[in-house]
View 1 (cartoon, one colour):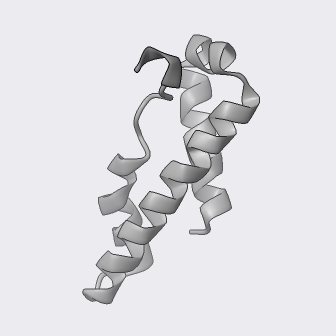
View 2: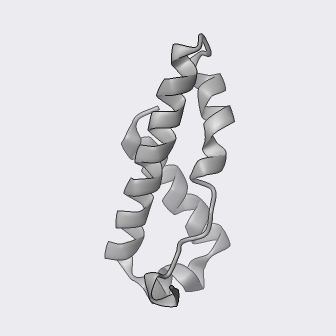
View 3: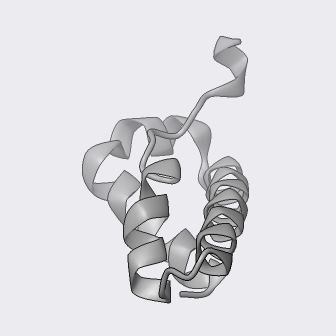
Length: 76
């Protein structure tokens, strides 16, 4: 799974589960956050694969990292 595929998965999930949050953040912030989460997820997948896990299993194990709601930095 590529980073872009992970980004797509994140944005698709957010559109279904958090449409109002996405709207308030705007496309640019959502895309930035999705890319950051995809990078973290990919790194975790690569680490798992070094331990002998295949790509599909690594995705299943690591996807929890990116399945979080979009964060509004103004709330911090």
